[in-house]
Length: 334
Length: 275
Image 1: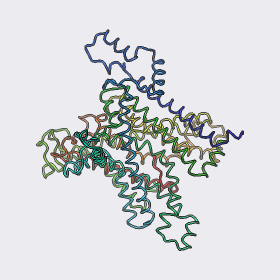
Image 2 (image 1 turned 90 degrees about the horizontal axis):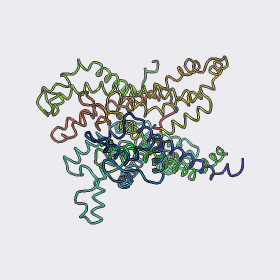
Image 3 (image 1 turned 90 degrees about the vertical axis):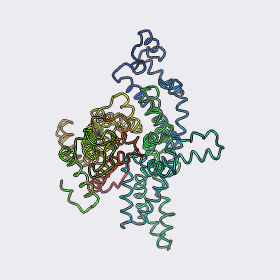
Image 4 (image 1 turned 180 degrees about the vertical axis):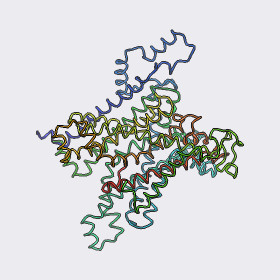
């Protein structure tokens, strides 16, 4: 093998090419699932009582008169350079709709993931510190119950108790109706207030998966020789847990970030619907109701793009963080 | 099963919950105090002696609807998981026991399917298939087979190295027979655990679809649908959305405890890893 094919750079190149191929496959799958479904796609757009001439006009306007193969290539090419077609229900470019929805979804999911990580970290350290005690078991069961809650119902109950009854939090949406008249600080505070409940629901319902993963790697780290050495030196147990063990236990978590993206995006769909959050999930569900196929195809494909890109970045990032994996990857790539 | 007698209280709790729910679902017509579709009672009556969990907007008894809803939720949960397990076992066995080329192709396919957030895959499929119990089962099955395929492939690959499988292959038995007689029976514990762990997720997915109005439709009772119907009456009928949600939570907790406990029994090495 030449030096190049064994190098880290080559491995990264391989991963990037693989991801692009995967995306082509996924986007094709989206197109064909929708197109191979029984029924004329035109029926979903046109009402009854349309003349044949009108139908033909609409068909031409939507580009549905071309052979399916050409439509497919046209769609793929459009996806590649950001032209996602025109929404049938909102009568404007899909790209514009996505440009509004994606930042909202990112705000929601990233805030939720931050809280998710904090909760997972605290729970994992607590479970490791209390190992074998009743408290650890209780925490474990409580986490499992939270993990099993249907998040749409959890959200509704949060709205019922913390929104409707106490009036502490808004019932939904991302901004108050009068947000346009607020100053920048008040407007920021307004968004934050709207963010609290959906973020809490999303994070509380999901952190236990990560907490268990972290606890396992924490307990593995606690069994290592350097921990024994630290104990022998008389390092306080608290310091051993938080400083020595946690630092090594956190590294495998980076691999989880990539794996976790689909769950995060999926969870956001549910929460967005319940809290009327103007993000991708809500757009998708609305698009299904209005049979807006260009929009459905676009959000699904975009979700795939986000997941594939995210796991690629996490994968490469992990190789930068952990030299051991970098070397192993190089050997594997050779 | 030999491994069921246990000291693990969580596994026991999960087992009890799952059994109780199964009995409730089976005996629903005899257990329910009323017909779930009969609009006999007063409208929006709060929980009381007459109607233990109250009535809905149409005067239907909530407890009876809850009991009948267990049937739909469990049926869809189990059927969709069986579909997923069947598909996953097929793909996994073919990949693990087949040629290297077949392995690579099938695993690339599995990875591709897994790259979608499941809910987007479900929504995409639902958008082309109109709502019904059968469609929900197919959609959830088609969107859930990938982790099973990976698991089965890994197990099949390691079984392939074992001498009894090598002997069977060496004797010239057909690949189909090797897979069916020698590999599959050894995979069953893994498959059962994987299935038990997935029922909870399938029930959650079904309830969300029905909540969106994209799953089970009205004359049929489903917990997700009941929550949707209670959504507009959070203030004047809190019980409508509250109790079905508790029922879903209890069911999912039961199956998660069962799955966790079984996994700890059959495979103590793998503590966790959410998939």
